[in-house]
Image (cartoon, rainbow, N blue to C red; front, side, top):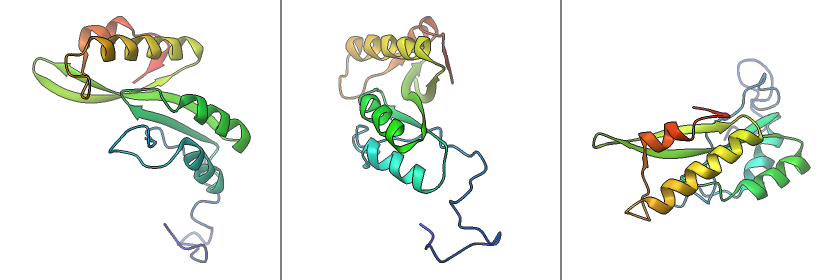
Length: 142
């Protein structure tokens, strides 16, 4: 965190005018072990820095979305909804960030997350198959 008095090389406050920059991969405390802030705190920090948009991409879930949307509306920040999905393919594990492009994308993400979370052998570390990921493609971008 840069102290408020430090204006940096440009002479402007570091977060005052980010020029349209938006964090597109942010985890809240709903990503246990990876994030600590509440959705409300994340939106508040983004608004304080002058950010116009922020994406919430919790790991393997959409748990914080209702609180995130409510906070974004109050805070005047455009909410981008997404999820970080753990994907397994040929014995390899990776992660992909999916961002909904409207209600169709949100519904698609909800169906995808529900499907692989409920069918995964390991409930604490769910893994989405590439087939499931591609089968629910539509309305979101990676």
